[in-house]
Amino acid sequence: MRVTDFDFELPPERIALRPAAPRDASKLLVVRPDGLEDHVFRELPALLRAGDVLVFNNTRVIPAALSGHRIGRLGTTPKIEALLHLRLDGSRWKAFAKPGKKLQAGDRIRFGGEGRVCLLGTLDATVEEKGEAGEITLAFDLSGPFLDEAIAAVGEMPLPPYIAGKRGTDEQDRADYQTIYAEKEGAVAAPTAGLHFTPEVMKSLQQAGITTEFVTLHVGAGTFLPVKAEDTTEHKMHAEWGEVTAETCARLKAARARGGRIVAVGTTSLRLLESSGLEPFSGTTEIFITPGYRFRAVDLLVTNFHLPKSTLFMLVSAFAGLERMRAAYAHAIAHGYRFYSYGDASLLFPAP
Image 1 (tube, rainbow, N blue to C red):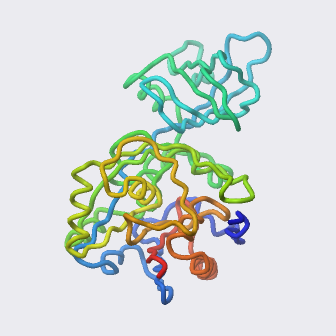
Image 2: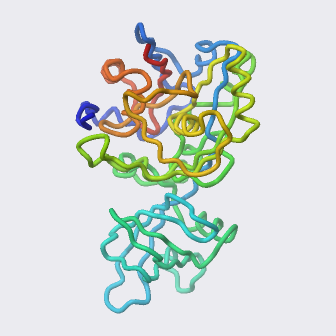
Image 3: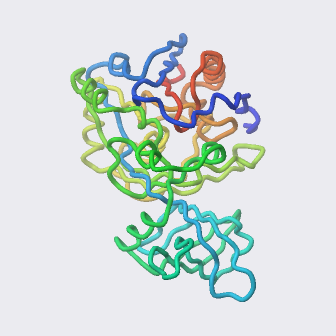
């Protein structure tokens, strides 16, 4: 399909720069085959039924936006910004660098330490490999927990560009851009559908007989990258690491056998479940879902409102139908819904 098939006009004022307060006060648009319903997110448990299972992505966002400068080479020492997006091992990460053209394999970069005389509060790395579109492989001088601590000290929360371009990152984002159940560190973008959940909503789900399961997909910075191809068949997704345990698979299959529905909380949970096919899974996935895809593992989807011509809008169009999603987004824009990472949510039923 043409990428332009997934375009739509979004007024800039519809882009949320902060989440709703409290989180579960956000709007929820229910998209059924026979129509649209406006709700508040805290009403979600009443819109599901006993026996359903919500599947959450328990990844935890790390402060993966690093700023520093090149060191050790003659000439200028330009400022370098790096956004980590895929951990390769204990000391190496793939990252998107700006300006990537200034870097060569073997270059040394020092992150942090702005205005410091000594090296405390800095983190050094070597450019091990240079790829396309500004992607590099960084080999850090530290590894394991020591590297994690250093990244936490010198890095910033990697807010999406449509937010970061309008305001600076602050301490509030360290809490706001994290789900209440975040556990396993490694994501550089939040699974934003989960940002709406509060302890009260989780308790209401339990009281309604709706169970919860957790999977892990470390969301990469590729989720922010625009689709530059003209046809969807020409676009390649960046790899993301995920895991679905055998125990989780067994419980999901049992719930389905009892008539329960699997409700993916966010496109990250959906992509991982579809990659696994409800079988144990541990590794990277590059799954790219567009209209025509046959869903195997997910029955309902909770998700935010996504960018025009993005892989995520393509995914929801595959799940609920392109014309239905165009109508749903037009309704959301007309009725004041807030879009993107800090915006409102939708509950999607599959296309017939």
